[in-house]
Image 1 (tube, rainbow, N blue to C red):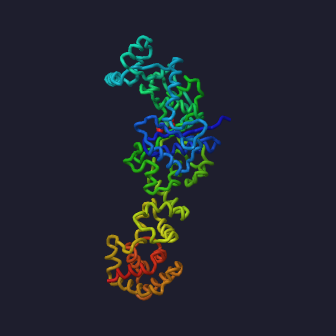
Image 2: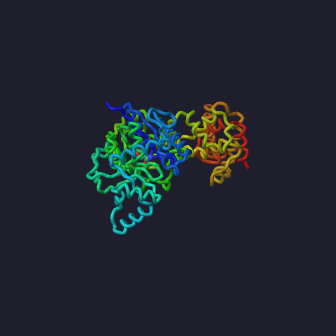
Length: 481
Ligand code: GLU
């Protein structure tokens, strides 16, 4: 069997997009499934738009998702360099070869001339294609143009006929070559275009399968022509449907986060993100959607990928993230929660107390940033009342009686024993129920309001335990008028 080699080839002109993360995942899964290699190539030929910070973001995001690569710019491999800007000396050799073999030619048209051609097509309501003006220039004509100071680009000569291939996801696809104009493979500044660099790199890196978004389908025809001209083996292609926003338009910033790091900054867990993007095009055979990367890998078949577009449902991602938050190991979750608690002085609590706080507040949340608000009353001395809470639960005569009695009781509370605290609180509310027919939940709302400023939140036993006697007394005292 041939060696399976796949790649993800992001351009560092932005932070790693969630759609690229899905493409990376499907390539990774395909490699895992077939004992193949997963390669990372940084496509930074567009030096103006590329940026080292984005390259770093791509590394960090892929790593955070657990999509580790076997070969890449940082880890090396037998087919490097894996960063296109370090491969600039490779492309002209192949371009020259194509010119020599008659598969490509020098084009001396200026940007202005090309623009004029384009405008002419628009005027005549014809699809624009390069006219082929420079295709048959004689040596003398070329010399003359050169003498004018023109520096040529190199264009690929699109052959007649059609280009056909069997897409792993979409089935057989056919392109009429007469609709594709001769395209530039090397710009006049000596840098390769995407379609050329990608073929040379995939060929040299012995990539066997190319799995990418369907926005590249029209490029694929051009790329196959280049493989054929070079006499190279054409890899197998698989094009994934697009990821659309809930309103069925292209997913963009307008809809919310789009980069993996942006999601992480908002409080999404990379495990949940990965699981979620896997479901954009792939369905588990047992219908169970929550799955680890290993479980997904064992169930993954590229031919079962849906060829249609998928909708990025933020609500579903929120739900899934909540599921992961509920289940995550508490130490790990606490670590991940810390960046969302930077406005508090974490030194007020021991690590163990902080874990208790997170364990007691994680249940209803969907994203980690919810913890900023939900844990607020565990920090600092004073609390802030939510709207209406004080009026309803503190300022009444009944509430004041409850708080006074609670305050008196506090010295007998066992603050170092959470279980005991639960019992004591239960006795306390039973007392008010039996003596004054006050509903236990009302009693607790009052105590909770005095300690947290809210009527909902973490378990009261945990609140007393973590705040400790001194702070509890202080806050109750403050609530008593
Ligand atoms: N650099 C290209 C992109 O980010 C890679 C496309 C491909 O996979 O060929 O879209």
